[in-house]
Structures are given as structure tokens and as C-alpha cells.
Length: 197
Image 1 (cartoon, one colour):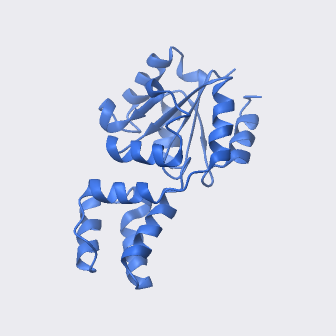
Image 2: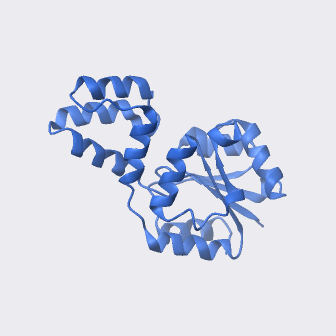
Image 3: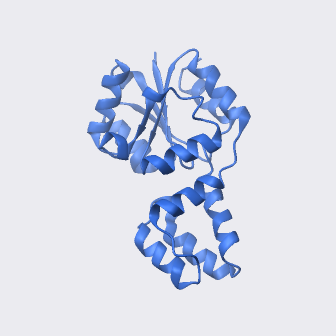
């Protein structure tokens, strides 16, 4: 029986790619330019400096990594039904959020999505804050220690094959790769299929 379910943030609980696209549309008129920058972004997993250099070269504003992250955060669309579903899950199981990235950016995304009120502050693990990034096994060990549970009692749900699926599985967790950004219905279905009842 599972005791905890852990969620990734970007492109799992929030549509980070959609928010990035909104930034592109605000800054660039040319579809080819937007497509090239989208490819460099690689869903948030691309190298940031080449992306920002191309951004400037194409006539965009001179942004830092942190500034771009906050621009993306401002474009996040909250989904109240998802937050309500997660709050219901939290009444029956321990839930946590695990995200690679900078503290200020990721917390801004959480707040914008209304998820800062769903996840307990001591169950939010952001790589810049804890010193380990997914898929580092030490991160998953730290989470289990803080939850007071074993890896086998945890389910990890996320979109990235390595960070959110292979990494947690190597650490002994059950993992589920989200096929798209989660909504209330898909969270309920995944948890039911994984035995959360």
C-alpha cells in the first residue's frame, strides 16, 4: 500500500510549455523564430545560455535566466479543479512536490498556479534549495527520510523519462510517466490505477 505520492511541477502539474509559448508570442512575431527558440528551450530542459543568446539575437529583450523564469511563471494558468483534487488526495496520503530549478522561479510558478496552498512547505523539494537535482539518488533518499517512509511506499508522477521515471525507479520508488499535463480527472485515474483507491 502506498503511503506517499510525489509530483513533478513543470509540464506535470502546470503547463510550463504553454506558458513559454505565451512568452514567445509576446516577444516575437515571426513563427520561424518562435519555432527555433522553442526547439532550443526543449521543454525547459535545453541549455539556458544558448537560448538567451538566440533570444537576444532574434530581437528579444536582454534577459537573465532568472528573469526568463519569472516571465514564464507569470504566464502560468491556474487550474482550481486540479488544486481541489490534490487537496483531497492530501487528506488520505502524504503528497510532495519535487522540482529541478531555481527557488524563486519554481516558487513563483507554484504561487501563480495556486499550488503553494496545496503542498505543505516541508514537502516541497526544489533542487536549488536542497542541493540535489533529479535524478540524483540522494534527492530521493532525502525525501524518503523526511517523509519517514521507504522508497517502496512512494509513487512518483512526472513527465520526464529520466528525471521523473527512470531516476525514481532506480531509487526504489514506483514511477508513473504522465502523458500530458495533469488535470483533476487524470490525477484521479492515475492514483486509482496505481492502487491508491
